[in-house]
Length: 163
Image (cartoon, rainbow, N blue to C red):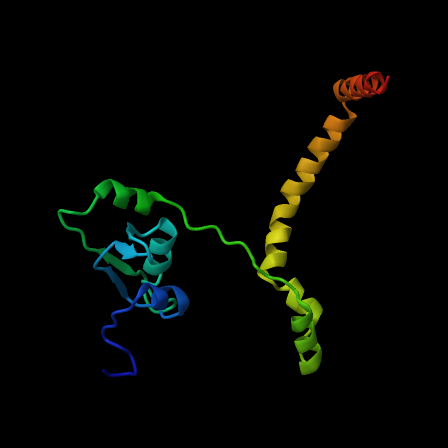
């Protein structure tokens, strides 16, 4: 093992998902995993995450992924996995009192910067144009004459129900 690099590393999904340790080549000996209850094929997101380790940024022009299959492999499931999309990510950021107190205690943390640079804020900024468009659509619907007629009919119906 020269140069401080591993020549070969067998890793679990946990290692592949959790650490930033790119490799020249990623080999899948199996495309199924035990999820605590039963064996199932990897999801597209799991496959994308682990295979995405292939190719070291700035060192390799490309990474190589080898997927081993045998006669018992369900090729339709593999095709579905390969053509699927990555799992969507949504922030679980929650500014708690404990977090605020820790920021105040360290005196080096800038709370505004912490919030501004969070993935949660990024997601909100990405969603903002769609939310604003939807708000305009709903406001236009509320202002439409058809809805005003419906509102008057509801009011008449409510008055008749009171009699």
